[in-house]
Length: 340
Ligand SMILES: Cc1cc2nc3c(=O)[nH]c(=O)nc-3n(C[C@H](O)[C@H](O)[C@H](O)COP(=O)(O)O)c2cc1C
Image (cartoon, rainbow, N blue to C red; front, top):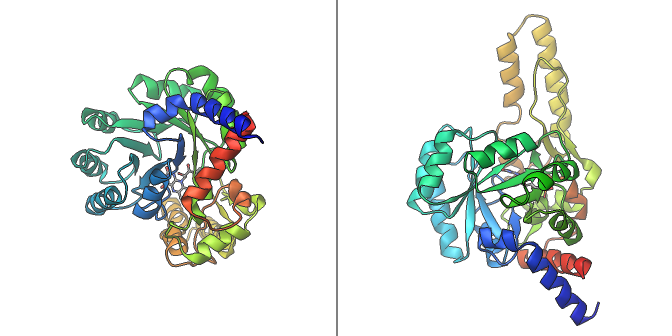
């Protein structure tokens, strides 16, 4: 690769993701997808300082904790970053109020269709609002209610997933709404060539989670990071529901003793239900509670046997721990070389 070719590739990349960088206010349209317990001040500021766009994962935080996290992140970077809120959080209104107090520039609403009141409260204080669009019809609806940018996340991703792959969502959504508002593509992206490919299809940028878990700045436990370095694409499996009467929200995580135990627990609970030892509601609750606290146990305590090692299929492209800036530089170089 000659210097001229590389420059030409970089220029093309900058033109292709201009809509994304203008929207985010970052040098590169690479978002560090919010990961509960993982995306806190250290990783978020490192991603933004390296030219990407970091996003704080609020997860189950209280408004007070979120407020502290935003302030601490701001102390570590003067670059823009976002806050990801889960729509089902019982204190969602107060979390939005915290974002307002801190004049957060970008809010991401995840975990189900947002309430109109949440959308209004966020737009009222001038923040840019991003939401997940799991289908074209919902993308159009979200645009109609004033959402400023969309993320389409395929089932290759780590964490809670929908049923459709990234490549199919991209083909369905980008040609229809890609020229209306910025659309960022997520799920299964491990290399810059894939980012460039989606940009050529009309995406404004890409969101990655799995690859950032092993960043030096990421506070995840060493054992959690080592599981990512060892893991292959086929180890990152979606949780399986064994009976349609007891729905399980699919989560992609690395196979371990916890994922095996989850199958056994579902079977045991189902048997108890069939023997009329527990009601349907009680059985459903026992299944839902199985994973309670499991992500924290894996990320923070390093319990990679029974904790939940949420990871995407791109985990096979995670090779070693490295500085966040190296991960981003590598992605940008791969995208630019491909485009040259
Ligand atoms: C450990 C982990 C935790 C996650 N937590 C959240 C979350 O709290 N909110 C959210 O919107 N997405 C969450 N995600 C999804 C990421 O933000 C991102 O969209 C996804 O990781 C992209 O796919 P990839 O893992 O293939 O790069 C999580 C992903 C992982 C791996």
